Image 1: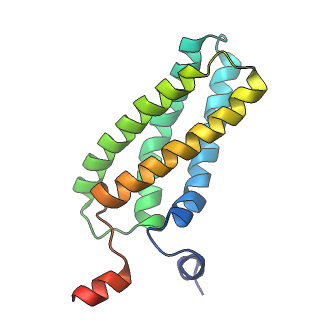
Image 2: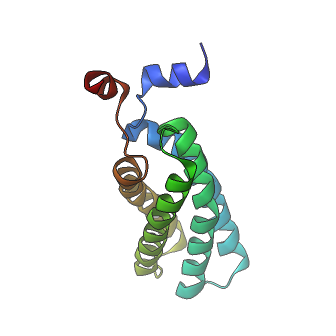
Amino acid sequence: MGVDARLGSLFPRGSVQRFGLIGSFNSLIFFILWEIFRFVMDDTKLNLQIGWGVAWGLTGLMAHFIHRHFTFDPRKGLRWTVGSSTLVYIISLVGSTVTIGWFASQPQSILRWIGLLNIGVWGIIVWALLRVIVFQFKSESTLDQTA
């Protein structure tokens, strides 16, 4: 049984659970980058937001391909999914960067937890936008009923 089949038996394609599981890899890379930026940059609200935004932007393209392959499916053309997901990731980049800026004055230990919560909240927003707009996802059972 392959990875995709095992994954599919636990979490169906397109589900928020599968998105979260697959996205946790991308989120870990994002969080490590953000921590690196926080370590090397001065502790100001602007630098906190710059580090967050750069890390979010760098991991956004990677996230597209990970979710295209593992969370959703490649039924929609690559030109469409890259173009439309760019808009989704720009919206989430701006929104999550503004959100983390609201909490910039919090102590560092609390800020990390807020950062994780921020990733989760924006992750759900990204999942919904990717599912509905970018991949226009329909489950296999829905496709079988319409065929």
